[in-house]
Structure formats: C-alpha cells, structure tokens
Length: 314
Picture 1 (cartoon, rainbow, N blue to C red):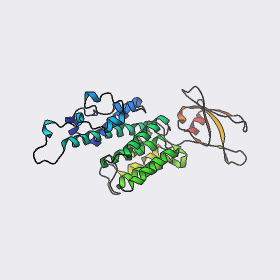
Picture 2 (cartoon, rainbow, N blue to C red):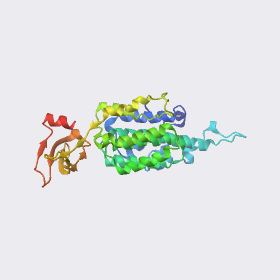
Picture 3 (cartoon, rainbow, N blue to C red):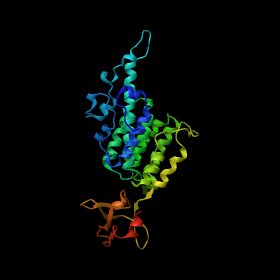
Picture 4 (tube, rainbow, N blue to C red):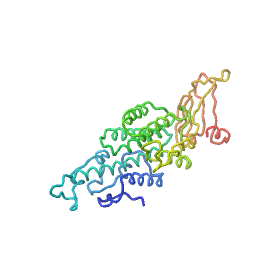
C-alpha cells in the first residue's frame, strides 16, 4: 500500500497528497534508514523515466519539466478547437507529485531529528524550504507549510535565529493565504521556542506518535474545519515536550550563572563542550557532566550509572 507511482498511468490513480503520506509513512516504517541527505530524499522520488534514475541534482529533478516527462500520451492529443495544453498540464502534475514526495521525506527527517539541532538536517531542510517558497505554484502551499514545521521540529527549543528569520518570512507570505497556512507557521514558531527555550523533543516511540498527530500535513481552511484532521490533535506536541535545560546556579544567591561544562556522550570519543544555561539535545546519550572552569570547583557527575541523576535529566 506504500509504493510510489512508477508510471503516468499510476499517477492518475493517486492524489498528489496521498503520495506525501505514502512517502512519510514508509519513512516512519524504515526509521533507521532516514538520513539527512539529498541522496536519501532523491531515492524517495518517483522515477518515471529510465534517464531520471540518477537524480544527481535533486532540485533540478524536482522542478524540471522537459519534453520527455511531459510528452502527451495518445489519449491526450489535442483535438480541433481544444484550448487545453496537455503537455503543460502533464508537466505540472509531475512537478506536484515530486514536490509532495520531497515534502513527505522532509517531514520524516524533521521528526527523525526532532530536538537534536542536527546541523546537516537543518541545512538541508532550510535549503528545501527556501526552494519551495520561491515557487509561484499555489498548490504547493501545503508543502511550504509542512516544511516550516519540519524545520522547527529539528531546532525545537533552541530559538535559532536563522530558523526564526525563515519562519517570519513564511509568516509574511501566509498572511495573504488561508487560515491553515497561518496556523502552520505560528505553530512552527511556537515549536522553535518550546517551553521558553527550556524544552525539546526526544526520539522515543511515544514522542514520535504524538508529533505525527500534531504535525499531520493537512491543514484546515477555517477555524471550524475538522474534516480531514481534528484540530485538537495539534496540541499533542505538549505530550512529547521534555525538559532539556541544563542550568548552573550560585550556591549563595541561587542566581543562574555561566559555567563551562564538558558533556561525555555515548558513542563519542571527545567530550562535547557547552556553557550553561544550555539545551541538552540528546539527554539519553549523556554519560557524565563535568565542570570545566577555573572559577568554579571541579565537579564530575556520573550519569550513566546513577539512576537519580538520570531521572533528573529525563
């Protein structure tokens, strides 16, 4: 039930939005195979012609509409007096199908790397979002809205300035759109500053399920529209939010202070350097936290074997 159409005939039997859902659902099933690379996204695109199999340039492959792809079938030949242009129509359909496939894969990347602030995932999603925002095609608005949420999921709780600027730019464009576009962008900004910068997401099964319901890429047209997705489910992101703020305080005054710390992560040879207050993007991988400052007393907190310390981080 999750194959991507491989011919023009199969495309006619599937709505473009259903292709988005198929790519997204298949990526969730193949969770460990999700990679924040253009090559992985290109593998999710439908290959309608043998010469399209390389996909060396994902964005050229996405928006190209050459005569080979758009060549009309015998049943699409223009009749006398017909003012339609089947070749242009076919190219538009192929572009929309590929765009939906890219959008579904991007949303999967956003949930896969939710709360990690992964630089590769962020750069890739930012590049795709900017590419889609330049498209004049109004039918791709759902893709732009979904990409904004995927971008915010990756950087949730960080308040990243570059991400905020992109979301504000999308917000300025969405003011002339419908209610769903405005809701998607404002939701993305809220995820970016989740918990006032003190909360984020992890990759547990419960978190993924809640984020799938909250970020479902079908947005309403008005406040009373619940035909395709119950709007109350958008609030399920609150069940997935986890405290991730690491903060050091003065013993005498109790005021927060800046303290350089080293975070030893499982599977990483060198420790991760940070300055409190900071957001722990992957708290489940932390084995120990040590103070690395000549101003404060050296302190090493083992996390891996101490259940009490582990509960504090979670």
